[in-house]
Length: 244
Length: 232
Image 1 (tube, rainbow over the protein chains, first blue to last red):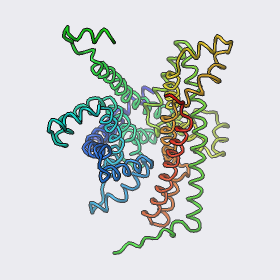
Image 2 (spheres, helix red, strand yellow):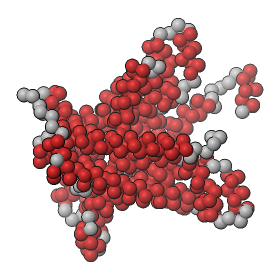
Image 3 (cartoon, each protein chain N blue to C red):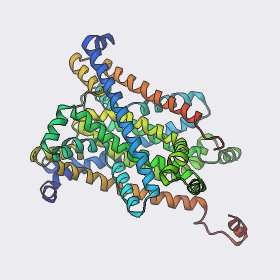
Image 4 (spheres, helix red, strand yellow):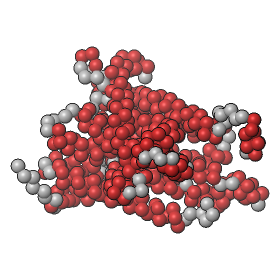
């Protein structure tokens, strides 16, 4: 296994890069970072729509979320393959297709994460800030989102892990990301499929596991902070602490 | 040029049959992988709770591996990798018996088992430990306690995440197309290749996926309400 890694690590890490398009693990990471980053503004809009008191916003966003959650990513990729060139007007690369799909898919899922964050905030905060004379947008921007996004950081990291895993579907439409590169290596070697795919699985495992552990740590930390154990209380609050 | 929308073109005759076969295979895949995932998932959760440190570590590793590696990669590993390690007569037997389907079921089932075991585990944690102590002191063995007292409640508590993961499992059966199992998304691609009616063939597949997903979600919501433990 080690000698496969030794002779093929460049393909797995960078694809054909110096002599051809970038690929491998680096492309996987680029795709996931871009996918999540680009879907972020959409997901916030959808989350706000989902939590909006107005039906005009709530119904369409809910429908979109349920549709995206109800169909497999692979079908979305097929649709993107078909629709994106129609919309743009010229043919696009697999990279663009996959990226567009990821943005649509992740927007819906990330929106649910952010919605959970918004809904877990005490309602009183919104009422208080509205009572103080902040407009809806100000309330969202200065009170709701900073807290909701902060509290949901661990889930956002988990969503990033999901995105990394989902980029593996690029294999189906020949985007040269990690899975595709590994398959190329396998086609070159022909005789050691188990070793090649085990390397592939382990690579994903290492990357995603580190991120998952990071998410767990973040979660504990934020939990502590929310519980107030990080905040030094003045002596006057000591009674409060003791009663817990 | 005006596009002529014609749903019948992809639904009549052989294409309709192709779709039906795809739907059937998707449902079969979902069903078998679901049973596998539930059985192994519950088993893992139970032995994790009752076993020692070693078992705990082993199960934790199993779960971490399956949750952190893309399901597609797991399917490829089973189909290309692990299959090649098996003795030749097993390989040829599997290939004669619809190998793509079998390996997809194994890969998807084992992967989702990790998610199921986590759901059940959080359900188990929600059941007060006093119940286990009471059952044990009544003379029930550990597994009897689990089967008759703890698990029935834990599964009820874990119903909502289990439903989400059932939907996920159903959607992920589409990954089997990557190794050539002729399920629904594979069928839609086939039909598209034959008829050049991209929009219609994807539309049919998408609607079927959507309908079944929503059915699972709906049925799950009903079940969750019906079997909810009162007072929670």
